Length: 305
Ligand SMILES: NC(=O)C1=CN([C@@H]2O[C@H](COP(=O)(O)OP(=O)(O)OC[C@H]3O[C@@H](n4cnc5c(N)ncnc54)[C@H](O)[C@@H]3O)[C@@H](O)[C@H]2O)C=CC1
Ligand SMILES: Nc1nc(=O)c2c([nH]1)NC[C@@H]1CN(c3ccc(C(=O)N[C@@H](CCC(=O)O)C(=O)O)cc3)CN21
Image (tube, rainbow, N blue to C red; front, side):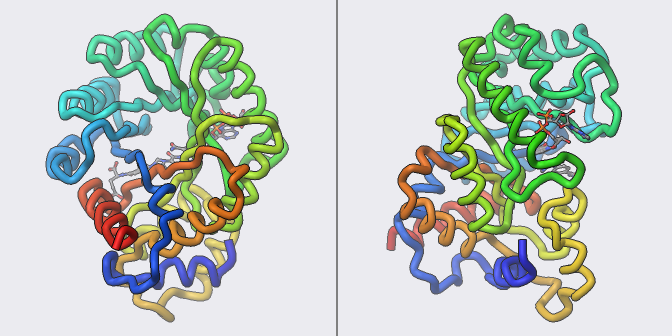
């Protein structure tokens, strides 16, 4: 990500006040968007529920500061409110096969296993038998608890600690493993800021013969400081450090930034590359579920106008 890209990205200002003509391509990209919440954010979901279309997929994180009860409780809340839970399974955070099965069993009891997101997880050293998401998929256990579709991670802007060739190899192996096991596959990406990087990545996926649905991780509207903090925390955008060094005092650090321009640009690029296949949006809701759902509604309204 270049400084200019991030700079223009954060400069968009208040959602809905954007005078850019939003294309129908962006609307297509937004169609059927999914959302993300933490295990502890059931109150945020309650607050946002009337702004979220029924049937929306809502991912539930698997963070180190959450426990099984919180994760299952959040997945149940998603389901009870008429949305589709997509619980995360963090391979490196699992201490044993028994723990994986306990989690799946509890999720199945609340009807929340049809879709899961299987991810490596941030611990530098695996806490149990699963060093990566491939090893969880290969256990063959997921299907036994009713899993039908597995999302796996993608990295349009790379990963700070994992080399690109390793990421691509694992993406190929995970796709093949899911196919072998008769499980549906979705590739859901780390959040991105750079539409050009996303398009190249999409082409990289398709050139490897992976034709699954893709969901591009997109930060919902949030305070600029918060966005930059998350970008740094997860190592998104190799120039995040430089951006900080340059200082966003050049702009309004107190402002809110939405992905208006990113969505518009990405929609346009995808439209001119129809070989991109099925590509949708997954929102990381750093600024809150309600703010993100309202941003999506207002952006779609603007696009239809
Ligand atoms: N929404 C989320 O929670 C997201 C989390 N991530 C993070 O990205 C990383 C990779 O995830 P996947 O693509 O599912 O990888 P993966 O499980 O498919 O593994 C791919 C390769 O990277 C290595 N690896 C995985 N996690 C690592 C880590 N934390 N440190 C060092 N090496 C690691 C594995 O050993 C393997 O060689 C994880 O740290 C994951 O938590 C990425 C995207 C979104
Ligand atoms: N490498 C990596 N690891 C992750 O865990 C991760 C990503 N990437 N990409 C984005 C998503 C979004 N994730 C997160 C992780 C933590 C919070 C979080 O700490 N939330 C606070 C409340 C909100 C706040 O204060 O910012 C919390 O207490 O849970 C939110 C989203 C996890 N995700």
